[in-house]
Amino acid sequence: MTGQILCAVLLVGLAGATTLTVGEGEQFATPQQAIDAVSDGDTILIRAGTYEFNDSIELRGHNDIWIIGQSGYRLICDTGSRLICNSQIDNVMWISNCDRITVSGLRATHTEPAEDQRCYGNVFAIDGCNDITIENCEINGCGAIGVYTNLVDGIVLRNNYIHDNTICAVQYYGQNLMMESNHLEGLTMEGNTILNNGGRRVDMLYYDGSHTGELAGVTNEDGYLKFIFSDPMYGDIDTCYVVPGCKGPWLEISLHPDEYIGSNLEYSFREVEAYFLVYYRSNRIMEMTSVSIPD
Image 1 (tube, rainbow, N blue to C red):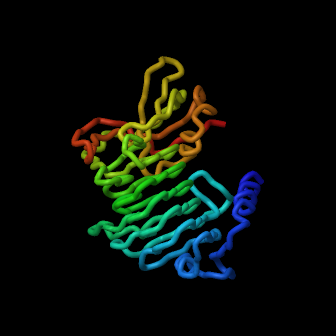
Image 2 (spheres, rainbow, N blue to C red):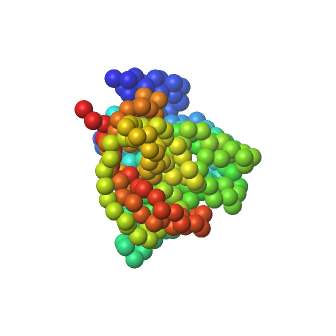
Image 3 (cartoon, rainbow, N blue to C red):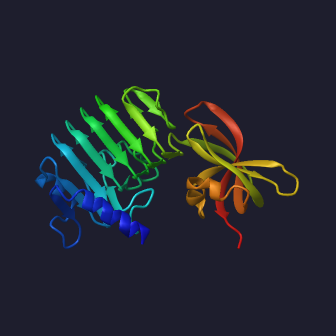
């Protein structure tokens, strides 16, 4: 119910502009068809569903456009608007020579490449633009860079989940970013979860196991999300990085840690010797593969 109310409020707030709707049985079947018909000041609403395409979705030379989906990393509605680019050399969405563009509530990724290939396209590419906002999006997968920018004056990245991109989470004026950073003029990052970008090589697997521990904290280190547990009986501290594909409500716990601090959580893990590719160092670490809340 809360998600439905938020959607209604969002759409009412945009009622003064023309809304172009994408989805099955709607005005436009694909996001690109709506973009080709958009005028400055319009809103493009992408209904829940999966949209696959073979070239970049491109928005060029427009001002004051909203592109919104029905779901995001922090859910706006109950269902999702997912964009999948089948080309490993194209961007999922490419915005160029535009001002005051907002993209919200989308899940954007590439098709996973074959084992002997890699992805060269970015998820969001922003070229020659001013005042761009990307918020409440999942920016995911083999995309070389989650958000690539070039000659951009003023970009806001807010409440996104940016994960598993090949090179880095964000590139801004030649700076490859693996975590939130506001030291670069013109870049604002607020409330993003940034995880497992840049890649790391697991050299050796030591063992698998499972524990029950009291959650002591959730933090972000070098762009990798980690959970800190204390043994309820002995007080020993365990630190687990969240491995891609970790099962269970780890994302919910990381978003609302105050509701879970002090709770006993069951978690499975593997201990590995991991080489952090971006930071040129090796660590023996624990990676959490699943987490659950005991009944």
